[in-house]
Image 1 (spheres, helix red, strand yellow):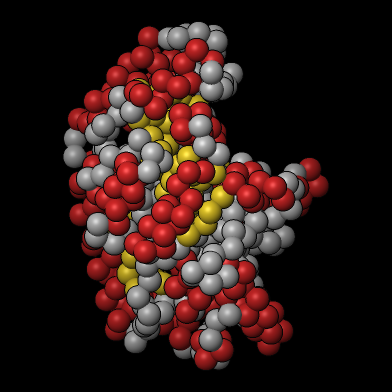
Image 2 (cartoon, protein in one colour):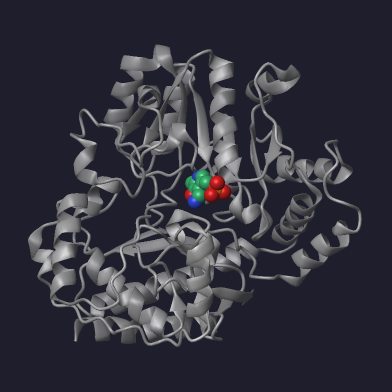
Length: 476
Ligand code: PMP
């Protein structure tokens, strides 16, 4: 999710882009010569800019996560959200397809979730002890998620994948793990290799992939614990497992690429991973931080019909409040019982998180929220596809309707290496034009478009009209 922002594409910017693309992806030069017109920033920042100027003085880059920084004069300052809309400090309104990068599944500031949290606050939130509400939420998860037997709560996706990996290592008494190129599993050291923002040219040959460390500060030796493989490649995973199974504790996989336009697994791929893990005593971990409570109530397990040993959850479970969990088969999870494998956290299962999760799970169970959402997601996907086709832009539509994206390339996309052919400059230009028209989808094609229950047909049609204008303007 590397963001490269240029508000006006002038000649110099083209040179920078040229260099960046060559460095990052070895993009064919023909794409870079496409003529693209980018509108200059049109939105009023009279109030946002002074706030962001203050932010720059006290927060590193003015943000609380590296991925949020879009430039000194470009980074938005948001004050409010409601349903599918958000507003910045100047009152500019946006239809939101970023949704906090996934957590908002029902809608911003949903009054049912808010009410449950506010009510529970009266009871106090943190006791370092089991609460009944925590038991109730765990029971609901065991009921809703196929194959879920036992779990533990944490607060972020990062903590969930970190603990899941440790559990797998403790269970198998092995130390290494397999992850897939282009997948992101949070900000702890073990998983910061070959993510969606890593330069593809540094990943080496498909037959001998090189784990690419994401940034400094990670001890070099950590790299020895990870095998990074291309996603959706049946042979690559089989070979790696056959060669190294004696040392591989876990296979950690995003069942669909929640950090690359929602690219889906090939038919039979997840069951292939399942059989290899069964055969070679490897713990299969689905990272469902983005897919959980979004693809279906039972997440990717339900949507793709494959049951891993452990899954990790966060994002949609709290509709914007911080709550996460990891869990699965009792025989694997029980290894953390008795303190033999450490899982801990002061704020795990705190009252605010549990009240939010409890309300979200009830809303999802009481009505077909995600099925209805998928219908509207299809309307969006078909509409975007039609606009791009009519404009003569070669593209690939990707993902499940509830977490979808598209890439501007005529080559089929099944994994991160295929992004080398994607015209990110044109994509970013279209998204900048959309932003100027009050539609905020990420400017980086790797980050999917997220939908929530509050995206109505009218909102989607409005989006499609503005998309048509934005594409037209970009190609003028
Ligand atoms: N796993 C996946 C698939 C994610 O997309 C993310 C965050 N985008 C994480 C883990 C980390 O979650 P968090 O930011 O809550 O730590």
